[in-house]
Image 1: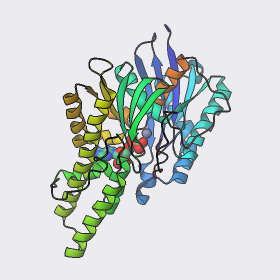
Image 2: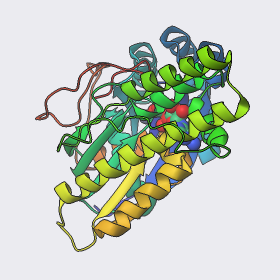
Image 3: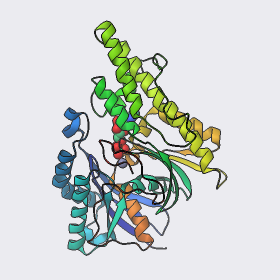
Length: 364
Ligand code: KG4
Ligand code: ZN
């Protein structure tokens, strides 16, 4: 298609209120004209995790201003965009409804077409927006709400090769941080503590490595850490600074080892449809240096090109939704006012549903 397409994208499925404008020029490169993300960490910090009702209200209050800013920063008005894309699931339902209702209002007011986007597709298609990666490629999504391996074959063609059967890794980091009296979000705080700790002091489980498939489990790891913490407290009456650092380092190592081995197997299972396939990562946990370098090593050993989009597009943002909407729109797809918000929406329609639902929302 040789024309410019410009899409406004809205995201509100978890704890980030986001809007962005993305343009694709002449069917080739993407340009992010603006990307506004208003995090809600401050609203949820005291609870050690996202409180769905608080999140939904905050989204409803801020979305229209966020859109206004995104358009302003892009130097455009609604009349200049070709379509309005919005996360229609999966996620915390109150937040998703806020986004979908806002997008419908904008669509009615402007007469611009509406395109519903699967949040996971937004993450999964990001490497195409940031690096122009060609289909097919392998994607590991590791965030506070998601953890899965995806074969990405087209804008609406995904194969879920495996994923967590309980907590997502980011959720495990957050819960562990809470157990150790650290703040929220837990990932960066645990990473910081772990720098001073001994990763070998506690031998935490590497769950499901005995199973040949690509499924993972992270909730047992958090329980093992709680036991180790309680034993130390029972023995010594409390935790020393070194104990805490060692617990963090050992926990982080267990997550990194588990993700690395399952990723190695995912590379083998994905095979070599092209000479050097891409292994891409997305999600906040991909910010962790130990995990990132473990995945980089796996990719190098398996003959894959490792790709981690800039962090601002790895974590929740509106640009990835605008881009995923743009790909759908360019393929002739549209939604109408019957578009509904879906708490659960597996990307791979053929895959068996995953078990459980984390505190940060439905996983797939
Ligand atoms: O992708 P994201 O911003 O939001 C969603 O969950 O969709 O990811 C946030 C998660 C949180 O659970 C946070 O603790 C984790 O990513 N995280 C990290 C690090 N930075 C953020 N986990 C481990 N190490 C980090 N450096
Ligand atoms: Zn996400």
